[in-house]
Image (cartoon, rainbow, N blue to C red; front, side, top):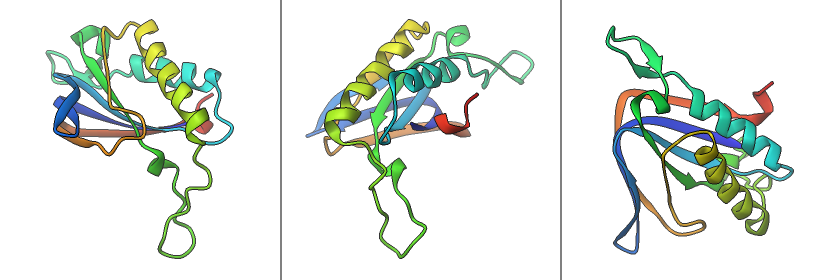
Length: 150
């Protein structure tokens, strides 16, 4: 699994001109599920993200987590994170999990975020054409690949 995490002051996702998810302060998480990914990886990734201390404290230091600020997450499925651009100019998406595998893992990841204490977990619509609006704060953007987690 791969995740792009953006610290936001607010964000929303829209499908067919309807807002399907939105949060104020917290993380926008773009989540890519690859072939071979497991529930264990979703658990590790959600634990890592929910515990990240990247929100500023009173001393202007990145020292606070989502729980500390009562922040939310907006999780948007994004198979293009699994794209391989090594050859040619057209990315290959062969590493992306098939929808019948990716969607349950995406949903499981969202449930794991709740289990890890995130009070507000909003979602896009899996497989839909989505428009994401965000106000990136910092900007702070992190990339986590479960292959890199201990």
